[in-house]
Length: 434
Ligand SMILES: Cc1cc2nc3c(=O)[nH]c(=O)nc-3n(C[C@H](O)[C@H](O)[C@H](O)COP(=O)(O)OP(=O)(O)OC[C@H]3O[C@@H](n4cnc5c(N)ncnc54)[C@H](O)[C@@H]3O)c2cc1C
Image 1 (cartoon, rainbow, N blue to C red):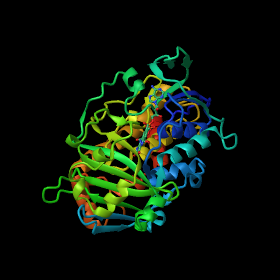
Image 2 (image 1 turned 90 degrees about the vertical axis):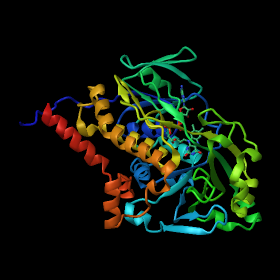
Image 3 (image 1 turned 45 degrees about the horizontal axis):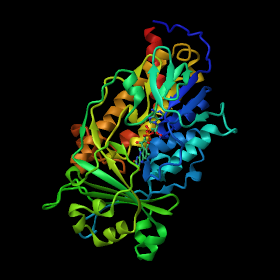
Image 4 (image 1 turned 30 degrees about the horizontal axis):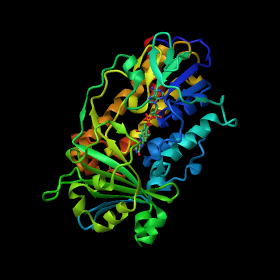
């Protein structure tokens, strides 16, 4: 059947983005570049949180570059190694060389301080320079309700905003998700976490300079004698090497913190070094004792949602696919969501989606839901089995065959993915069918 020519013209959309985290800010940049008028509504200001490290693998990093974000201003650490260490002795059991990563995948594997990644996307969103209309960022606005048919957002202070497109980038306890009728099915994870940071000066004073190597270093994470795999330390430098970030995982029964997500209360060092942390490599313990900004991060396992769009509203990032941290893909998947929105609502497809926002959101869901769900499921599997974690180099032929059989998520799958082509192909199929 010959393709019918779509004569509708592109029109800029008014976009209301609820939540100014990495998902919301990335969506603002992507949609600004695509020619839309965006406002971000954040429930607080941006100075509350100290945060810890965020991985930005090539599948996320490439979009920051494509959007012209000043990535270097975010003081990224260009990771060169991934070391797996023994819990008790710190002896290196595996060393994955990442020095060829940028050459292989087109961009480096960066480690950011969360606050820095947020800052650079925020700056790109609001900058006077650069393509598109500068984004309006409104703080101290808590969204309480969204009418997804009318595109109306209501805030706790009584204000209302009407938009052509409403994005729920409001994180793990999303109000927008609730408003589009999704009931989150979740259960407590058997593993919980503390995030702590150590200054470079403390590292140097202890003479443990290797802690600031451009590497992610893991201790534990696999069962050993009477040590459960839920004991795991993940350490990496961030913020231009000025801080070393630690994620300290342990079995959930070791903690008194129950509220899901990121909590701002400072945790006691005794809580952080509970249970079999007494047996951890003493050099690592010495570093943790010097830590500041010790915060609990309570983890829950979420079932994937059946849908992530309804009417004029769509979910982005953690609100759409909250995942365990074990593939280090939470932020990258939020960035990919943003990229998909920017492509679907781009001038390339004329007015096909800007004059039919609901059709555009169905396309967004088609592009994002299967891939994000796959990463979400793989993150859950990696909680129980470290071998399920994405590898860091291309797979050899036998490994690839094994991965295909076991459904393991691979680095090839993550980094070879061509979203431009994916969207083009799906839009072409739609045009054929109409
Ligand atoms: C404070 C904080 C600290 C984090 N620290 C880490 C970390 O150390 N390591 C890590 O791997 N990941 C961390 N994350 C999570 C990581 O940033 C996300 O998994 C990922 O970047 C996806 O981001 P997101 O934008 O979807 O969600 P989030 O980063 O959770 O952003 C959601 C935003 O929406 C805002 N919001 C929520 N509800 C409303 C509402 N009703 N109205 C208006 N605004 C609302 C929140 O204040 C927040 O700014 C953190 C997230 C937060 C919020």
